[in-house]
Length: 84
Image (tube, rainbow, N blue to C red; front, side, top):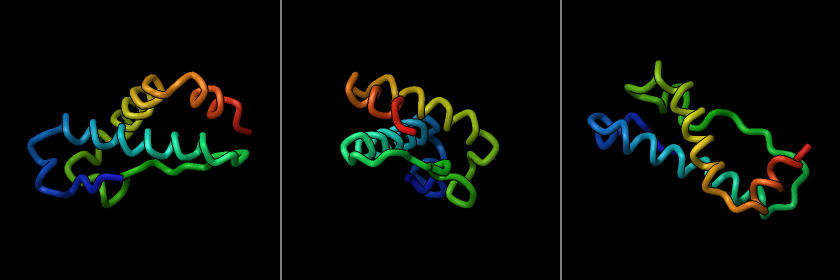
């Protein structure tokens, strides 16, 4: 996931949200292709990697996951939803 402590993200919450969503998309797409039965996933870019966004991370995570999931193919969405 993105390291939101980097100066690149200090003035751009949009860039932070975009990169966080992309990280979740990469994870979900890889899982969908893997054939594994379940995905156990901790929040991406949390804790020390959240930088200035520590307080906003719960909301940013929900937003990133929702954006990513909407962008997945029907097959990828089904695969993820059917995982145990």
